[in-house]
Length: 250
Image (cartoon, rainbow, N blue to C red; front, side, top):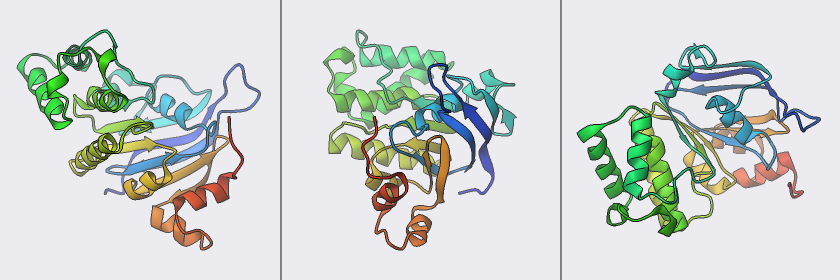
């Protein structure tokens, strides 16, 4: 893992018009090239809002985002070419087949022809979806949709991949396939920014972690460093509960 930041967030603020408080509140983060960076926090902590700003889906009220040395607002089109996004909500067309979905998303990233077809064939085989390639997505199980959702975000071999709860609500086999392939992508040089409520998964998967709450960072470090700093905790889940409380969030 490189120590060069590929993502810098400085004094980032986002306040929604319907809210009296900031969803993200003067947040500072640095994510190094080659990281598997876990952005963790309870419901409403600001994780998805932060990811949405990093992906240019929403704009901050103030602060700055620099990706790969370029200010996000100054060159969005170029930056989008190196970014992949796998949202929490399944971003697929239910009334299209798996292949039709992937051709659509591939062409959005500028892929075409034999190159695109070969990529689609490779990933459908990789994720055990080849036999379902001509089936409508609305016939797929949750795990199959999650796998296809991931493929749609990585077809163009992004240098930075944003993942918002990529394994939520799926079977163990699908989860294992997704995590193992994400590790492969990371070894090949893809920086991964990942949110999850699955603390055991995050502890074993992430190289670095930031825990945020009420839009602010409250802890950061490698999983090992966080456990060493919190001697009264045995694992990341215990640290998470210690720092964010045990009350149920909306």
